[in-house]
Length: 73
Image (tube, rainbow, N blue to C red):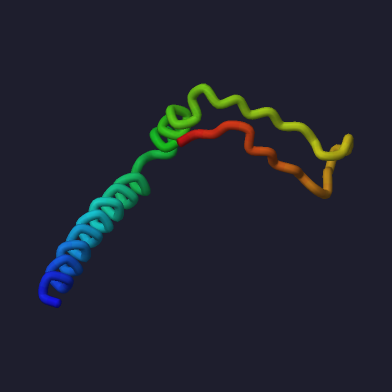
């Protein structure tokens, strides 16, 4: 039982460290200027082609259909 408790404590420590790291990354990202955010988005979508077509031949469509063909990682 002690081994299980030790393993659980170890996993909890790892998860806490990962959470703290991600939280810091998210907070740092939030404080970046919009230009840097858009630049990173562009880097992530490099090589992805986005084709937009109206669902109906209508200037104000009531429904838009999204098809995920490829994608960023």
